[in-house]
Length: 287
Image (cartoon, rainbow, N blue to C red; front, side, top):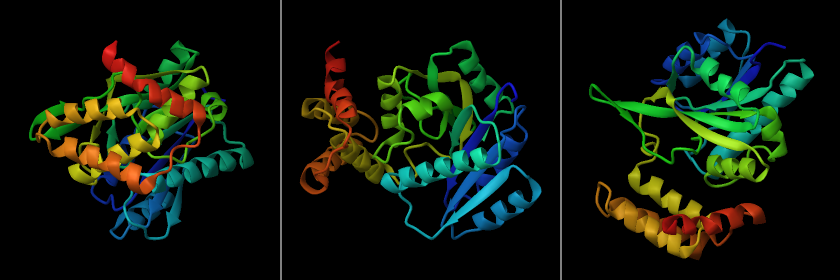
């Protein structure tokens, strides 16, 4: 077993423009993965050809091809990631491939050559660290813009789990905002989580822009209903969004999504401890 034995999972759909840059950045990392499983979720562009060429050149790359589907960053995304990670772990077990860490890297990321060396080094420094991520930034013209967010919470498409934490916390959840739920599951299992703002990856687009602002914030509202956020917290959160650019637009989209959850979705996550955690989030506004 090497110092850092890890595997990578990457879901992708119609990523012909960004995928080559990610491929170069992973292949040229100072510490390479023992296995990289890439799921092509029914791409209709040249993504399948790019992946076929990669698979033929790099022996530790495996490609899973799914049938064509509509782009979806909610439950379907969680299902794709969950299946890919389960496949990867099973493949490693059957082929005696060591893997102490599991990385989830989105297809629109470009990593520094020492990204994995730095991020995996954090686990060595802190044995209680269960899941962590780097931070995403994007170029707006010539200016590098760092994405704002909750400073301590690992983001979705740039994260790494300690395998022990992944297994103890129940794996990858089938849920809206699965990355956030995964963080909570790790916390409730006694592990630390962290986002490192000094370990940066470049994304080809802001993470909220993939499906457009309206749909993105609508899904965020549905997700907050599904995870059982307290209504007062939702109202305060929508007001906070209303004072952000573009003014009112995303706040209304978010609140509409929450109401849609109440009237249409009507189902909430079937994890009582996770629901309780989110239910008490409103107290943060009064700390």
